[in-house]
Length: 503
Image (cartoon, rainbow, N blue to C red; front, side, top):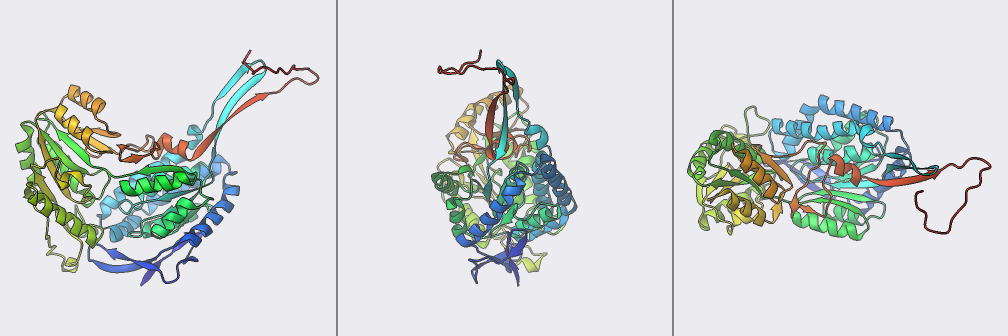
């Protein structure tokens, strides 16, 4: 059976802490174990940090042209290997190959942003701020930085981090999810082919022991994390206590509000895709539809029809729109949530539990569940309060847009939201008053382009550091301001004892 190893200092290896400590990697479509991944610990993290620190000494002094040339080459390799990487992701995560290719494309946008850092990193210059005195500023890399990333986007989320970190002169240590680890090693190989020096990008696989080692290691200057809110809080607390910069993005409960003036076919189609795409395993998935006034009954009818039309099957089969969940435990958690919702009074309009993929007998033990649609959900129900991270859409009914805004603002999460309407006034009122970091108007999953930054509010972002875009540049660099004076030779300049002022 295949063993997935660390990638340290330019090549794969089992590591010092590994021994026989490995974890299974499943094919979610069949439920079978297809590989083992080594689980590293503190010694492996230290080995990777040592390699990264050594590489930093030269990489940080490389020219901006050299760094962007590597990024251009890396970007081209991502294009050329998109299908192969997509199939690797699909085989371990379960999402469709097309969906996996989509995440690669969105991650590649950050690489393209990194290719243009020559303009972004330009400093400022002020001439003659005082007699014969000029001031300029520039930004320098931090050193060795690390990323801890989730299973749901094994390519895209790491690509939100390491291209910007590396292009600004840092070296990087990635700890991907042990559920779908192969994409990280594949990306490491693409970096090698792109000409990235050994040690600049490293991968250590593992669980909590590897995470804790990263958070505590004195040689790591900054940590980026995407995952659940409880773990985001833990990462932020531990890493900041160790003196590190931290990006910590947490969970979500994203609402899509539908007004009576909306095109219900359009809204329901996009909400269906936003709720059930990638089996709902997205931090930007729509998990709550908020029907305003008379929109409710019509919206439920269209959502029911579209949910029943979703084609569920193996992710590598043409025509499949939704694959399995990532693990058996995830499947059981989601199906138990539907049962709990029914017990608490919700109407189960579409029940995805117990789905069988009859045309694919090899999938009899796969981690499949179908789309579920719940109506008459209230805010005290578990289906509303919990982040289910599965293909379950809960519909809440309210009378007015203001009630919808209050509902969203009362929720502890603040990642993303959407409004479907034909009214510019309603859209403007909504986007100004919801306490949410990312908003879509007639756009269901408002993930910003790479030259903007990604990050929510409230419990969806712990601390104050969003990811990629301008905030990513600031996170992975620190500024210097230089004040200079070049006095003329043999010309006496009087030094004063009072506090200096420009004059």
